Amino acid sequence: MSATEPRTAPRPERPGHGRRLLLAGVVAGLLVATGCSSSKPSASVPSTVGPQSTLPQSQGYTCDDPTGDIGKDVTGVGTLTEPAGIDLVTAAARVEGTNLVVTYTTAGPIASVPEPFFDLFQGDASAPGLSFDLRTEPTGAGGAWVLSLGTTPAAGGQERFQALPVSVAVTGNTLTYTVPLSALPTIATLQWSFGATSTQPDSSVLFDDCSSIPSPTTGTSPPIVTVPTTAGG
Image 1 (cartoon, rainbow, N blue to C red):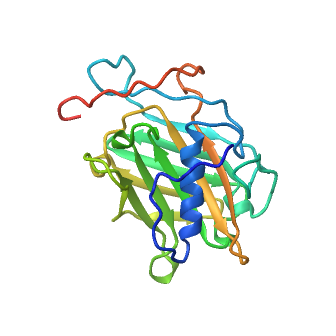
Image 2: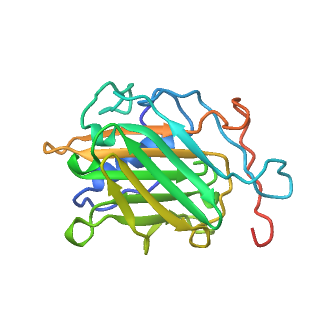
């Protein structure tokens, strides 16, 4: 995949910031390019909300990913098997009742990975107002996992993040959390992209990713159709 600029604007460097920038670029790049760690066809996915849409509201997506495709360079296809705790096997986001349940399954224990960081991007880079990020990493007290929601203001500008009062459970090879839909923006597209990174002792950042490209409903590559949300939607 050609290196892409992250959706977030550059900020002063701080511990762990490098992996955030890399993963933001990787996940955003999944929407417009090929050749990532799990190579996918290029595609854009239309909106599921608005007066002109004929698509049903997205109920989530389950992304199966091959093992041994960890990357260290966004310009190539990943071939590394370690650290296995970020080697995605399955990543899923499912609407269950009034909640969004997100689960990552990796090839190895997540707790064994240095500085793990997991990201979910819902939407399309061409429609930041209809998109959001959910990012989690163990930066809380005593190594507790913290979940943050990133959104772009309606008037435009830089994406903003706020911590959510949501527990993140990590057991062996599985990371999962449940977010009330009331705490999230409208799920506006069929596009779901997942990523995981690990910052190594030498400060290099390794990553794996998985996406719903092409369209999970048709298997084709429809043109992007960004339409305004309906009233109250």
